[in-house]
Image 1 (tube, helix red, strand yellow):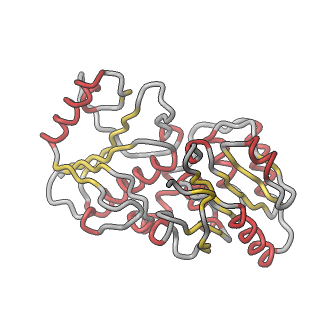
Image 2 (cartoon, one colour):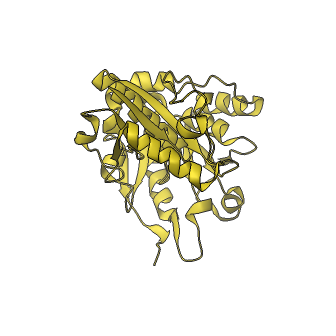
Length: 288
């Protein structure tokens, strides 16, 4: 049998989808390919080519706009036609519950096309060492990023991730309350004593203006994938409700050392690795 797994959205989600595809192939022995699909000039871009991935893409020669890697710039008709062709070739398997392991999804009965995020470590954790190898960088980090990496690898370093941008709107705010970070910092200090804090954020001005819980180094001046690599090399981690810091933590040594993760709304339970410290917390302001 042959199966395909859609790759989309940001780096963290791409990693979840790829890890799911990799484990599906290992578990079933079937041929599995990935299907990257992105809007041209959109907010998110395909980034897995920066890593040592081994899986092949789904490409129909001469018809890449239908079944291959390419931007969604062919107009509405071509997008609809592409999905029509996919449904002719495959049984469509869609994720029912985000951040929940569904054993039925990993036992395909025929050629299947997978649409979802597959955000549960149980889908691929049995192949952890291989997944780490797959997500080894093949493109070099910048000199500035390497300097950061050398620092965090030689210190009692703790990464702290503050996610904002698309989490913040006029009538909602899905970013974390600072009380979560205060509790997590206290928990790590009680276990390892003094440490150096490195903050990673997509809203660096917010951090400079608002974060006052303890002295820190703000990691800045890097691309997002270089920031990811620096975060990945920290010794311990305080995650945000974000797939970006989830993967940087999961791929770090010993799956992140001492880890504090926010248990809030849908980010809880099976989304996290069992050994991580999960703190019940609140968002700043939920959608009304």
